[in-house]
Image 1 (cartoon, rainbow, N blue to C red):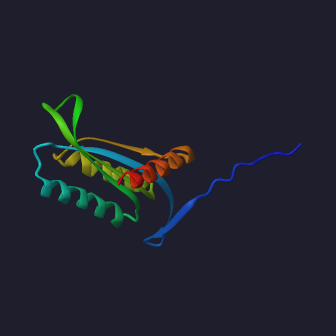
Image 2: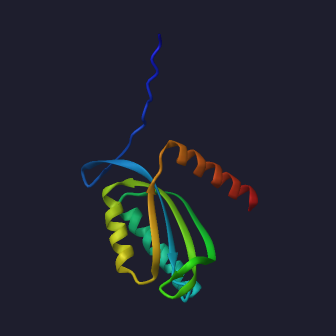
Image 3: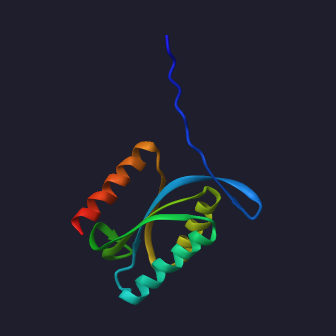
Length: 133
């Protein structure tokens, strides 16, 4: 009887002479609706640069625009949604979320580690978005 083994591909990076396991993450965050377009772009750029400085490889960025919230957050009924998809060492996620908590422009955020099925689904979503554009 044949036994099948799952082969797990491990992405690793060398950063500051240390080897880190690169995991695939997706972060969705909601920015305060009172921000101007320039402030939103600056904020998104700041955190993209923050991730890249920690050794992240940005795979995808999506601007979902102004959306109505299901319930009020900080007495606001809408917010600007953004999504980052990237690979980075796990240590950088704690630092990123600490910066999100310190920044008053962020209303909510959620970071999830993607498994192989979620990565495949995200790839399909990116292809579908390219076809729409």
